[in-house]
Length: 83
Image 1 (cartoon, rainbow, N blue to C red):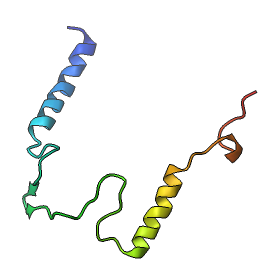
Image 2 (cartoon, rainbow, N blue to C red; image 1 turned 135 degrees about the vertical axis):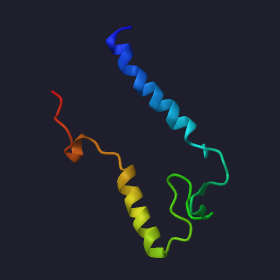
Image 3 (tube, helix red, strand yellow; image 1 turned 45 degrees about the vertical axis):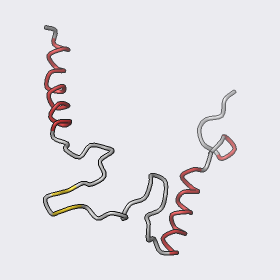
Image 4 (cartoon, rainbow, N blue to C red; image 1 turned 135 degrees about the horizontal axis):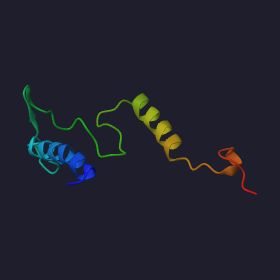
């Protein structure tokens, strides 16, 4: 066995332990922890604000979302100019 293949053995073992050690895989509806079940309705879909956010928090979320989704171009001064 080559050194490169031998180096992958511990990585493969870690990957197996990670998958086996995760009883709450994506798609499960209820997740429990040692301290009891996780509360429902406290998280939103990816890209949405948290349910129950205040008006101030929603405004902050929308400002951040606008910055994150802004498309920058050469006239914004990013990157070297091509010749």
